Amino acid sequence: HRPYYSDDIKVKAGDFIYTYFNGVAPCQYVGNGGNWVIPSSVFDMPVTAVSFDLFNAYSTVETLYIPETVKNLEYTGLSYCSKLKKIEVAENNADFASVDGVLFDKSVSSLLIYPSAKEETSFAVPDTVKELGESVFERNTYLTDVLIPASVASIGKAPYNDNSKMTIYADEGTYGYEFAKQNGIACKPAAEFEGGETQEPADKSQLTALVEEMNQVKN
Image 1 (cartoon, rainbow, N blue to C red):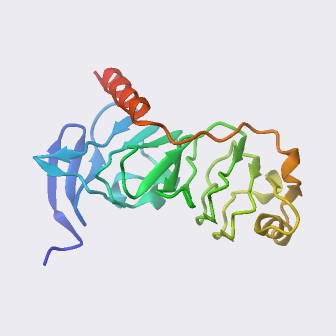
Image 2 (image 1 turned 60 degrees about the horizontal axis):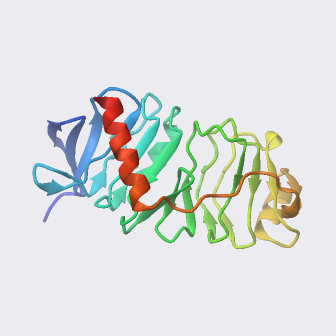
């Protein structure tokens, strides 16, 4: 029987220190700069997890790349990364996906984390999303306008830091509309939303180019 995690295991390789956290997992960044590329393997073993110790308010991460091998990710810690602007996920990751730098589950039915330092003031939730996780937008101070489609049927606790600065765009009769009214958040019809369209998940060639660019910056 293998332990869920072990604080006794700490091994450095490249830009990270690794531990066992329900799999081989980076637990500390020791590289330079804000572009963090989590490798798919280390010591000839797949990197299948990311420890909650990797992310905190003092993290320097600005762009995070998650490889196809990671299936256990303590993503709630990402909301504390005050400099995080973008999350990218390998296209063939079986558990997670990224759209417009935002973290979702693989089916893009659950919005998990919206980066704290993403600078756009508006965001259109994809119409495949059924659930917004807890505190998903809470630490982002740029965002003021969010389009919530009729597909959303659940919104977690305290999604926004300051309800008075937010405007939800949702049609009457939808969950987003009712959530706004119940929580004192300004609400306008979805047709009035003027933000940019959400992007499709990046294809493999785009992700490969991103990793190469990050490696060039590090070197």
